[in-house]
Image (cartoon, rainbow, N blue to C red; front, top):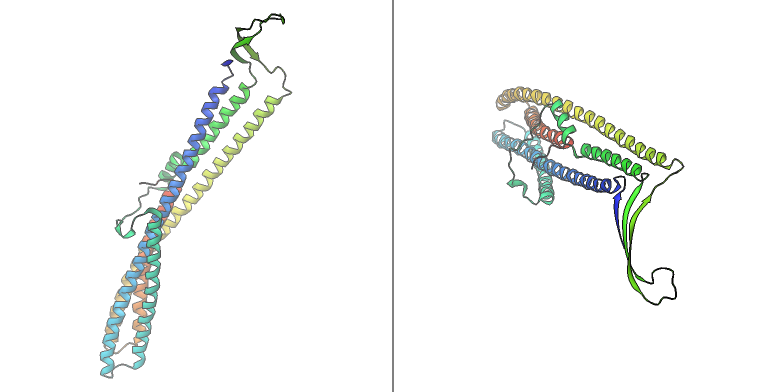
Amino acid sequence: AATQPIFTGNILTNAVKSEEIMHAIIAKQTELARIDIASRVKTSYFNYRMLNQKKASLEALLKRLKLHYRRLEQFFAEEQVQKSDLLETEVRIQEQELLLEALGNAIRREAINFETLCGLAVDTIQQDYREEIGGFEASFELFQRNHPLIAAFDQRLQLMAVREKMVKGGYLPQVAGFAELHYGKPGIDFFNDRWSFYFQGGISIAWKLFDWNKQKREVSIVNHETEKIQSQKDDFTKNSKQALRQLYDTLSSLEKQLGITGQLIRVSGEDLELKEQLAAEQQLPNIDYLAALATLESYRAKQSEAEVQLELLKTQINTLIANVEE
């Protein structure tokens, strides 16, 4: 026997469309996972860079402390400074060496994390890489146009429209052609012992004439799901826009902080030069010079850290709007 649908209210066509949309939704989920992994790789890279810049800043401070310590040793041999000055400087040196060791361990851990994520050694990556972003409006437009979740919401809305057509199509007349090949005793002559092949064919029609408003209820369920998906899309867009605006505000604030930190480095550098001269002339306590040295290096460290934080913020922005390059 064989049956060939002739008219099904487009149920079969819409079933094919439904499967195609489901495959497209799954592809968007895969794309979301790719974006998440790319974000984790970039974040690890910038964390590694930030830790290395902190290390460079500590090493610079340690170098100056050791140079100062050697100068104090000469002054102490000439009885121009007290033993306490040497001890204060030595304590600062050991504190920096302790921090440097802890930082080295953190750098090694981050290098392992990066290699685990992408299979590449982090020190082979371009060291001056920077994230590129546009303005807020351009980024939000890109988010609306390219984000996989926005596309997935739209595809789910298309899926609901297809399902509504399938529901309505199920209540239209279902027409099919059929053909059957039999082998047996045809007719109603039970005493005829002759068996033979015979063929039957025709058209069948099935139609739900009365359904107790079932079609209306099923369409109502689909419409409710459509409204739910649209509401989820609107909420996601609204929340993402708010998060994007907050990221840009933080970015603007960080850029201003970088400018102020640059001024602080300039002023602290001039202050250190004066205090270094005074300390060399024995007109300034050693502890004051050490404090000025630590202040300058702390501002330099903040500047380096803020520069990397800027790249991390840009990475967050590009991740949020799904702007992830290879």
